[in-house]
Image 1 (tube, helix red, strand yellow):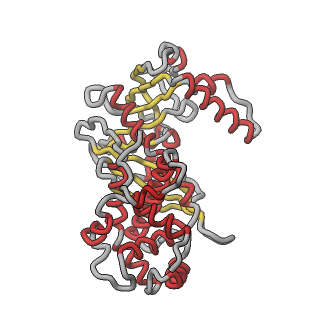
Image 2 (tube, rainbow, N blue to C red; image 1 turned 180 degrees about the horizontal axis):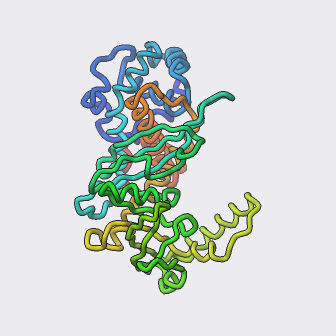
Length: 376
């Protein structure tokens, strides 16, 4: 059979997978015998056809059969997707570990990265769903997965969509910076680390006076300078939670880039930027309910940075999640689908890293040598 560009690209992608990816399929129970396919590689190719390219189960088995990868029904493929949950999760863990992501101390807390995305199924009548998910680190396990309607009251991004146990620490972006979600975690014995949003989450002093943060932030004038202050947030039910704000001054280059994005967004929406919005853009401000005796200011900022470091994968996941038929049959198939999406996202990011170091003669070197574990 003639060697095609698609086959060459596929072989390149296989080189990026974690070591022992085939053995992991057997160890996790994804493959117990070769039935309907001739190799683990063919199974993975079929699963990614469904997950990454947005083919329905029925479309996937038709295309995979024509390509000679799979010989099974759509029902059998769904069963195989369910069986592959732990395998796909293990592949994601392997890629994240190979990225040499440094994790700060967590002082006995269970660290959970929180995010959500909207899934729009193909077609004019395709359903729209909001996927709420939590990844526990350093295990990189999806410990919560929930589907809600895209629209309607209570279906937006909120920490209240997530079950919380004592000593859980939920790490989320500014879309989750609301007092109700912080109170939800607090009353369950959990903690939060979220990017602060001054517009949606005002803070106050112990006496109840509203705090104007900019005078304090202006004391952090040098790039990389950090600081913290103790304040309170108040819920609609007049409940108060003590929080700590940890801030770091951005570099001059980062400030310019942020201001450019803000101006571009305001221009698209026909809005006028407020001066305070541009001023706040000079700092990263993180809100936490974890006390300083447990995690220092630097550790809080580092944990938020952990979430930021995989933000690219989250964003890639969100862009890919708009393609595909989300399995709504059960939690297992939905989690397997999510792990498949995250795997594609992480592989895409890794491909981009290697693209910066391509030699003028292309990818032929990969046929001789395995890719390096990390790039400077």
